[in-house]
Image (cartoon, rainbow, N blue to C red):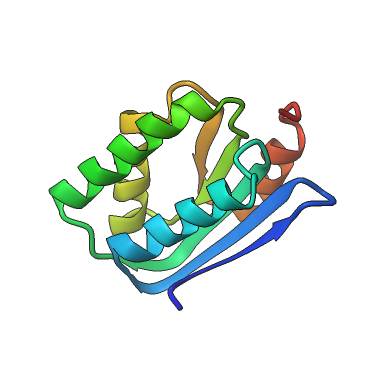
Length: 124
């Protein structure tokens, strides 16, 4: 599975790793799990360093619409994303512009920097 994740309810923390070709349905399945497992308020570490997203402009708009709908489910936790320059970072930036403005979300080159920043974010 290209998008693997662990939801740790005790720590209120979600770890996500996207590898290989990533399609819209895999991202939507992850979103659905966050909702059904009541993990929206948790801190999220999204590692896309090995991801090869295959998302059309329409797919990114679907993601943005879904995130906008989730804005009604406040609080939503901060997200630290990691991706090298290229397609994955481009998709993350577009995602951030479409639906991430109401909460803390940042893109990092380094997983250590991402973890450090995420640890410093207030719990929701």
